[in-house]
Length: 329
Image (cartoon, rainbow, N blue to C red; front, top):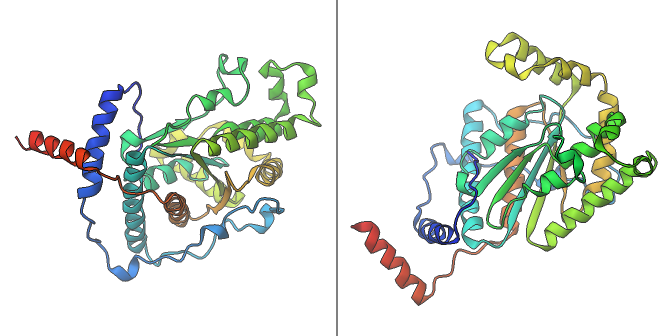
């Protein structure tokens, strides 16, 4: 599962990379635990992508599609295969130290963001991944521009950063509840409702384009949930004691603004889905199906980087063999 690692000295990081190179080059391919015929999925990421420049209507996007699995056991086998692929690709990402991957998860309450992150990323090395959750901004964060707090949590090259909610809240929740702008310390002329949202979209697109030019690939997911499925999940949170902690009165309050949220999401997706940082609308009424779709999109994105296995020179090979000798003692 993803974790974080801060303040790592350069020498320690270099040593870790050496060991990572050994692992990448020597790790055998795991034998599948399920029949080979199960480990086949025909999921095309482009079917869920929001094409830049084209009008995306959420009413035309399904919240549930035909399952890509025939049983829960088959689902487990399919997801396991994807998790293993992600693990291998993440090790290459870390060892190459050339790109960073930023994953952004957005969706209505109970859309399954936490579970998707936990299951899909379960095989990723915690040393190469960090999850950041963005709740209501702190008093310190409100003293800065709306991108400041998330900029501080961007992944470094070689790592995967996951934003569970993100700076997009500033054009979603804040747009649905514009009174929040008054608490952000902005001058009145900067809170002009006619211009502020387009200006924020522009700031976001410019920021993501800047990240792309500097080696960070941004993939954004909107988990598309129906109001009826949300209602069922809220009831489960009430009825099942182990889920009680997930539920709050604020969840019921926000359901009243469903239409406004869908309008805000639709406008946002159309304004900020680019070739450099695409949005994917993932049907989320079926959690298992959503996780399979997410895993395929992630594998596809990492494979597109065409990450090479670490090239080892003669001198480097001698160093690695020296480490091998030390470790064998």
